[in-house]
Image 1 (tube, rainbow, N blue to C red):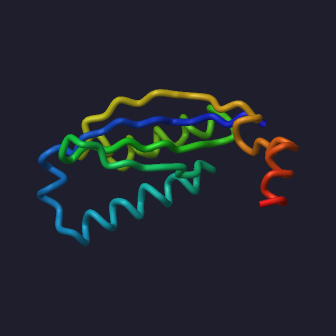
Image 2 (cartoon, rainbow, N blue to C red):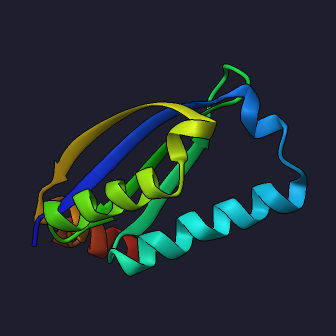
Length: 111
């Protein structure tokens, strides 16, 4: 089954620094909860070399779930704390759980 992704490249706005650590943690928990409610799974997050910059990839079975999640982010005030670029992507089924080649299995067993 093909998977759909919401790819977010983001940078913290100064407003994020005005939140206490507890408020930041609470906000992050609300984002994770919103993802769960929209049937969206966090796949990977990277801190980028530019201070305060992140790359996040969230996946779902369909584009509607990603749109629902994006709307939830808007409702949580995501744009208040982050400058972001959001893109949609797709991942083909064969990229998700590709079976190892038979030759690879043989090499692993004989090693």
